Length: 407
Image (cartoon, rainbow, N blue to C red):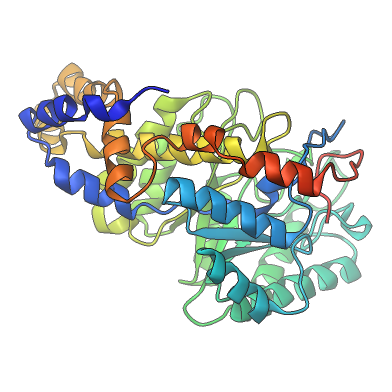
């Protein structure tokens, strides 16, 4: 283990020399909050195979326990997103109390309108009226769950689309989508938000009904102020500038939140920052520079930990978000703006690169120490017996053939 703390004073001196208020940066890092997903703690895989992990969570109670453990080590993962029906319970008040007793809270509610046989041709956009009605009813039920669970976010992702030209009327599907979302929107609890997620392709391959941020944005505008766009960082075509999308939606006050993960080719659901750390850094720079425009943005992880240890992977994901945020906080935005206004291309770019190339791990180690945590969460995890204990207690869950978590 590297003792990053021994390098902190040197880094703090360097940052102060660049005019960075180190104490202010540390204060903001301590306030960072990243929501982890319940489904990230259970077994998952590709569409070909689920590789079971000894000790993986088998039910919502074990998922909450694992999420609470990640929060205890990182200090910045205070909430857990739930997926319905995977995390369904008969007593939401009791589950809410259970989460709070563990030191976390229930977060975004995610409806599932893609797994049932009836949704083969779509959910809200299906040509089958009964499928559309059932999808709406399920989402309305999720709104009721929000009230009981104390959640203020309904996170909507649809697998709707077509595989072949001529398979369905594209404009009619748009009309069905608008009508279905509008009906669900009417049932949102007061003060809550509907975050509309988009995806470039998959599982539909000819067209997707919510294929990009512009479509999601248009839907949000039609619905009203409680509807915003959710950006999944893995849901874009190759070469898409996600930071630009973020900046636009922030300025329009329609950026609702993120599902953080990383991609190499398609929707790979890899650990955030593992493939493109600079891309993640530029996204956080847009968020930091936007100031109050980013106040209500929800930061959530959405990943499929297929071959890596569930808990260690989640901890690493949280750490990578911390690193990107810390680097964005130490950009000298005054000097950056000065260079931008002067048209000094390389001077402006170097302001970004100076921050990105700074090793902020000593800074984060100091922040954790001041929060009463181990300065290195991965080292703390590897030295602890939690993973070994749950492996003994839980064993290996029965594996399924496909890649989605078991209910």
